[in-house]
Amino acid sequence: MERSEEDLSLGSSEEYRDEEKSIFTEDMNIDNPHEYSKHENLQTYDPKRQPHSFFYLGISGQIDSGEFYDRDGIAIKYDIVKGNRWKLVKGEETGISQHGFRNQGASKRIVWNFPFEVIYSSTNVKDWPQIVLYGSGKDFRGREVIEFYGSVHVPTSPGRHTRYVRMFQPVTSSIFGKFLGWIKGNPASYKDAPNLIAKGEGREVTRVQSGGLLKITFQITQRNLEKYGYKTTSNDD
Amino acid sequence: MPRLDSKEERDHKIKEELEELNNKLEIDLSRDDSENDHLNLERPIRTKADYKPEALFVGQILGADGFDNEDALFLEVIFKHGDHWKLLALPSPIQTHSCYPDEDGTYVFAHPFEFYLTSGSIHGWPKFIIKVYRLDDFGKIDAIAYGSITLPNEAGTFELECSTWRPMGNCIDESYSFFLGGPPKLTTLNPLTRDLTLRENISTVSSGNIHIQCDVILKSFEDLGIKTS
Image 1 (cartoon, rainbow over the protein chains, first blue to last red):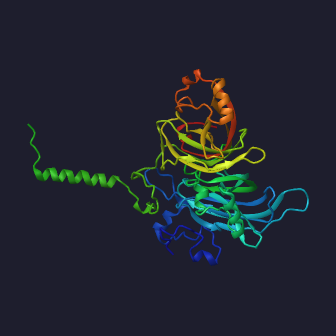
Image 2: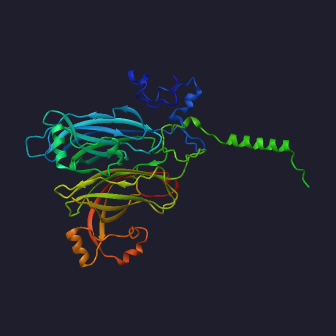
Image 3: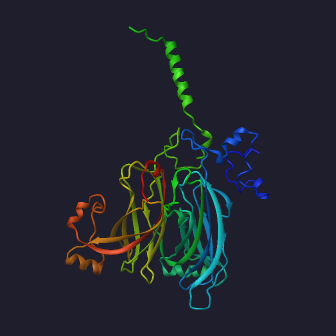
């Protein structure tokens, strides 16, 4: 079956949903010689022609644990924000974890151990993906309220990485506003999240205070970035 | 005297030259997947792969500490690069939100940035010039520290620490700034990086540190023999 030029996300078209086919064999349609020559595995690096230069980025890892001064009962939601040229190949871009409570001891650590795994393909490194994180808890009436925000860029070099993300919480400017927010169940929150958190524009007029620390482990796998001239790590092979 | 070409011969020659040019241009229009790219600034038609080195700086202004202050702080960060570097997207000025310190005196800014540049020279490697502002309870804004830091030139992940300072005045100015706020400021940012000889005449007082996380991807630097690690 001919793969049209627009259908670039390998994971979402129908023929790949039911059966787990390998990405190396399914579109080698040898009967059609043009299909065959376009296959990216068979491309040679010819400077006179613009090749199909996809590279793949596999992001996996987990949201391990966190410490949020005195708050308890927090669930973490994540959202991956990237440029529009990045196509999702496999995986879920957003997820919500369970509500975690501290252990009864003195430690303030909350454990989620929440894994994620996403694969993206793109032709340009612009708009590198970021993970935007929200920490939400239940208020006195049982409503889910987002309190903490944070974001971290996906690491660019392959391998294992541990990142400690500092979360922040917006602060209302008046005491009355704070009380009203507490009663109604919506304290100060950002309207245009995740773009406001991920891009950083428009946040100049807001006031925040520190919210807590979150530990995330990443495992990055890359394919074809070095082939197209990108150098992402300074480790010598 | 050579015979001038008649009109038909001139037309024929022009046609021939145009055909030659058309055959040379191998434009693969099927690859133009920029339908959603509103930042499509003067994208040239490519006839061969670009060997121009490119660098991507991606990261976050994490936070600050070491400022002995109870007021809210925010940063203004200016991205500066040399003449032969070109930013491949609209420049976005960085001004962080205002953050109140916690018990340790750490401030959280968590302001993400991304700069994608083409380079024509290794001179003028990109830098950040940072101005630290204080916002007090009455809503007054004051510049209290300055700093500058060069972004890493190695590919990989780095945690940078930028130390900051502010100019020092005489006795009267210092006591004024201690009780009322309003420390002495620089009139221009030139002493920071542009004209370092201006620093001979000023005395400064040290201030806190700014933490920045920066990931770097380099393209085609090694193809041209430029070694950075």
